[in-house]
Length: 138
Image 1 (tube, rainbow, N blue to C red):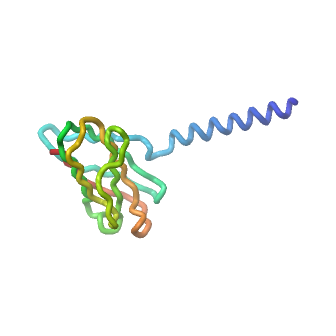
Image 2: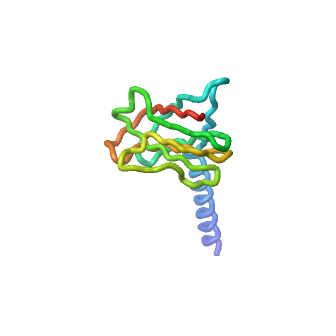
């Protein structure tokens, strides 16, 4: 009986550790995108370390605006990214095509926080390193 309780404690402790590590995995936090005063665009950069990693950003917009994203920078030819955008209700928005989808345009928007998720393009060669993209709202 005593060994069963010890085993149960060890299993429970292991499950708590796994849950804690899942929450703390780098790249899962969401970074708020803020524009400089009077500006309608911002350049965002980050890094990825493989197909399984992602970077997430929040962007607050008003109803009826247009969001545009496009990969930029010197890494854009060799470090292709895919940009996914979800509306404030969590629904994916924007058309997808056969490319890596490194640019998006969403119009018109609903008011609220849009989630922009960047991943390594799985249609290109694998890479690790930095990426840059521009986001604009008008």
